[in-house]
Image 1 (tube, rainbow, N blue to C red):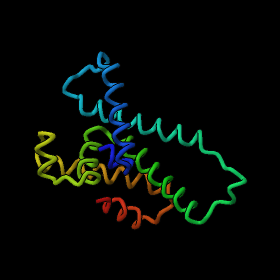
Image 2: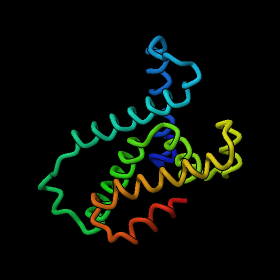
Image 3: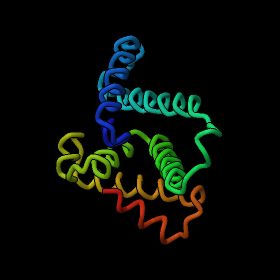
Length: 158
């Protein structure tokens, strides 16, 4: 899942290692052992958020390197969109976040997700539908996309 979020194998390895280290340190804070997957996902998401925050704090504009190029501006805009989507996904209820991450980000099949989460196939489909609708509602006003465009883009994350 870490790789699906950051698309960098080495960063994903570092984030997973950091998340597991933090989980071991805070293991007494886990109240419900059955919820360990969600707890670990949240720790991993927080590690990624911390990484991006540290990156923003250290990156400053250097006037000697010249003005931003068009590709640098596009890359910055793309990173902003990715950050907004990640933040929106992080606000979803755990059940929806698990389903949308497994299906739309990791490419798992509906049947595989149902088996992994031990829920009926129909529940997977309804949670996915609710998660996509919630993301559309959260991202549409934020990104200034027309109504029909916002819905199509979210549904084609695969």
